[in-house]
Length: 463
Image 1 (cartoon, rainbow, N blue to C red):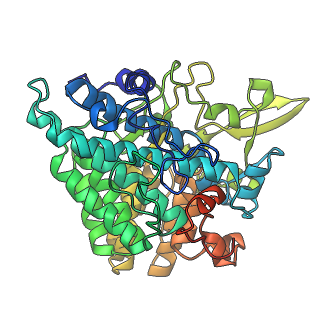
Image 2 (image 1 turned 180 degrees about the vertical axis):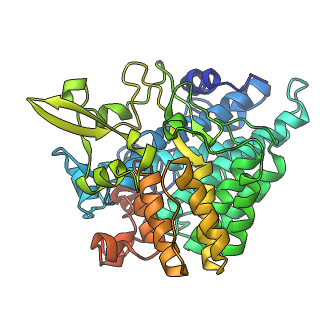
């Protein structure tokens, strides 16, 4: 098998798609989940039959890397934006309507970013489906059973990740579990419920965990990544005991630890011991997220600007501690300007996308334990994260106070990651904290083009 290295992930992805003539992933986008990229072009863009594309060890490896590429596509910009911009840490510092709608919690069904994210996510699903459909039948002496299991496990994991994100963004979504190869595939299927969507995520994670290796690879899925995502899934489903159990498995592994200083999680060469899963980029396969955060004086567009309340929290030694490193300042026209510094590799353009971190597992377990009235244990988990940041221990003494402290800790710890909006929605506090009292707006709209292309799809209420 090709060595699992950052270079493998970053430089092979684009090549793999061309090498497979786009048959694996770009053979279907998601207008009605039927592979229509354009209403004027009802035939899927497909250069080689999918059942002939994955036939041996080399094409199986390339196809799997191709699925990572599609996940990388939506995690590079669209998904983090949908996670932080509707919240209270970041504002949009520009005039593009698609971003202003997200910032102001006034999304429309024709929002370009929503449409693009949805399309990228179902392209990733289709890539995973192609791997899962073709791989079991491959009989190649260059593809030993252990590696075949690993590739299958990765495909199950990646499909689970995408469906989990789709579920928390849109609610119940169409569950497409077989390859999309013609414009009829998936048509008329309609949407599953959120419970059914999360059930599918759980089924895929169970399969993934049984197949993946117990290694410490940090930019491809392994058993710990499946367990970490499962802990998050159980948290969202308010299954507190299960969330605690799976977070404990990750925390108890010797492969992972909270790293100090805080900035070490986002410092080259990346892939720190805190990282459970991050998506690797390189100069040739660039992450341009820095460009949206840096002021124009530093070569950026300054589209995303930390809000004053977030700046205060991060710079306050009693709340932010070493997490103040998420901010940086420069002087523009004689005035000091503060900007977000999580993505800072403007020359190399190789900042990773952060998917699963150990700090989250501590805070998942803290919340799950608080919900079970295990207050001392929950406080210990919360304070482990605070100690790493150099912040004094919390003294929250009641379950209510502890849950609020955990919520506030998550706000600071994951300030510029894809978390704050989804945290406030899942806990039912988006109305109280953000003033978004119309709960219909707590879900994103199904893209308009998909509704036109497949009449069986139903729009989320309020759009």
